[in-house]
View 1 (cartoon, protein in one colour):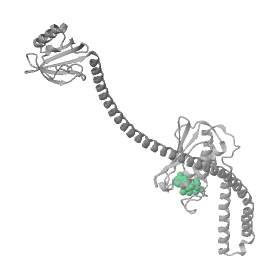
View 2 (cartoon, protein in one colour):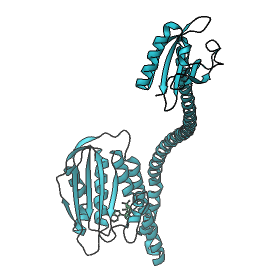
View 3 (cartoon, helix red, strand yellow):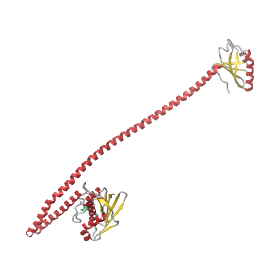
View 4 (cartoon, protein in one colour):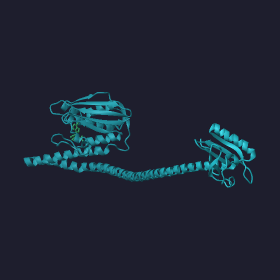
Length: 400
Ligand code: ADP
């Protein structure tokens, strides 16, 4: 171990006889006389020389010795120094420092440490600030992104609010239009009945009163006019029915749907008889709160369609079924008729939508529009599953 080297103090090299070979650090207070050759022991006053000898011996025994307090006898006053020594192969290194110098050195060391620490600190501060910058930059990026997203969100929300307001406005408009339309349909169909009755009535009069005077062609014209008149009458009746369904002031009543079905069968008795149709109820129908007249019309339209759109030469069979769901009833009316292509599934529920000419299947194209209105008035949905040539199943739900 190298002895502590004082910053302010002595540092010198001795030979093995105690002769001072080199003074590495001078101290004007201590060694003004070092111009001439001196030995190590001449440094001390008489009191300390013995102790200095012990220091020297100890150093030779242990090769290194520290912090011996010795009195250096140099004018003006002898001063106490701390001596440390260290024997390297050929030379002896000895340092001497004053008490306060030791402190000063410690301070220096501490300062050195402090410098190191400061350097470290500076370094870490630098690293930290770089990190901070990186983070700040990232944070700024993220913040920018978030702000952008937020702006987009606000814009989308604004757009949605605008769209909602527009939808509400359109809904209100639609409600007015619907109400107007219902009113118009009712008034028009009601008021059209009268002139139509006149047209058909006078046509019939023409036929009975002047029939003999008219030729075959005139008769066929009258028949065509009457036929048109009758069809128009049916349309007016159906339109009236459509305008009457789902009325706001209608009241629901608990009704046995089995009973309603029997009523429907009676209403379409002739059609059932003529076609020898079989109507099978798979599950006993429940008692449900319905708008009775509307629900009767719904079943009647579906059953008569199921028989009307039958296949030639096949006995029409209609299966009626119901399933209880958690908050609704699911009904089905299945037939073995001509079926419908998938592309027409939506269209058939529109008013006046017909897939066939009046010559093949007569009708007005209003029946299913009525069904849809009735079902929706009951808080349900109606749809069809079918394949052309393989029969159809109409499903509808009624809210419990
Ligand atoms: P309409 O029966 O007076 O023609 P609807 O509104 O009741 O009018 O039916 C619309 C169209 O849907 C019908 O013209 C027919 O083409 C088709 N359709 C309805 N019910 C059935 C069914 N059970 N089988 C096959 N086609 C059907």
